[in-house]
Amino acid sequence: MDPLQWAIDPWGKVVPIHIAWFLIWVAAIAGLLFVIVHAIYVRYFAKPRQFGRYESPVVPAQIPEHVPRHSLTARAFHWIMAAAMFTLLFTAFLPKIGFQFDWVTYHWIAGTVLTISIIFHIIHASFFLDFWSIWPDKIDLRDAWRRTHRFMGKPAPPPERFAKYPLENKLYHGAIIAAGLTAIVTGVFMMSRVRTIFFPRNPYLFTDMTWGMMYVLHGLAGVGLIMLIMVHVYFGIRPEKRPITKAMIFGWMSRDFYLEEHDPQRWVVEGSTTAAAKSAGTPGQD
Ligand code: HEM
Picture 1 (spheres, rainbow, N blue to C red):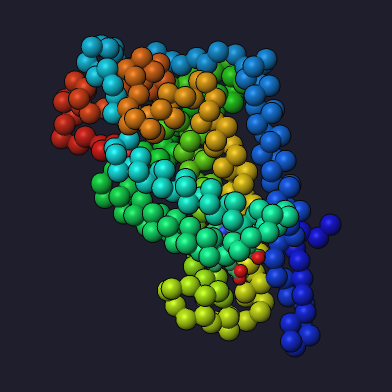
Picture 2: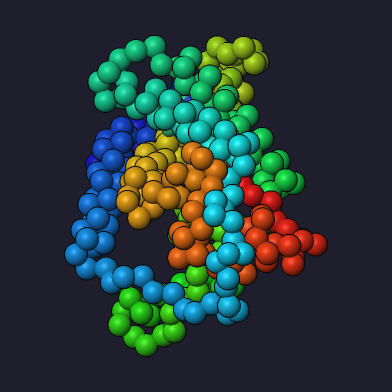
């Protein structure tokens, strides 16, 4: 089973033209398997989560009842991006599995929305939010080591509570960057193969081989996103993660949830006494 489709160019050279579309099913089944195995593991095998003690004592009254997590701008970005992403996935893959419609125009329009929203997000996150909050830090790596040891039944101290984002979310964000940027960069070039309002159509911009590789990369990023989005939606609706999803709708999470999972020293929230003490360098919310 060849994962790519090939053709012969006018000079008789064999060039790739697309990924083979059975990869859509491979990605969807892999996503589904992950969901099933994870759900069974959590339901029947996982031990309750344990964190180490706070380094310094925490006074709950110092934390606001509603802990601000995502600003209105950040939430608007998230949901616009989600709408664009679903439109892209459905317009790209429904015709490939038998639901024919004139998909290309809807697809490049959604692609343009996604591209603009991502450019906005990069500027917003770099200059107005706490840029480093989404990248793994030393404590995350040390705790990943501890968690792996404990998972295998070896002795290790419990991990600390999380900063704003747990390591898993940070790694997921990294995977989305890789797949999303690949789809965007190749997609912008591919717009010159179809009629759009942005630039004149020019299918001769690259050689057939380069175009072929570009379509293959676009397709691989696309099927990768099927898996990533399935897993993201699954975690979003899991009961223990719902407070995080609610925060993406309403902007805040409860003090109880915050104190259960987050370390006020690692994620200093606006309106807390810790924030007042550290006000010289209070991070923004994203
Ligand atoms: C979730 C993200 C995306 C997915 C899943 C996706 C998926 C796909 C797939 C499977 C194709 C068919 C490729 C082929 O025939 O080999 C395609 C075509 C295309 N994509 Fe995307 N894409 C995404 C993002 C984008 C973005 C961000 C843009 C533009 C900025 C874009 C622009 C295009 C264009 C113009 C075509 C049509 C090319 C043609 O028919 O010649 N895509 N996309």
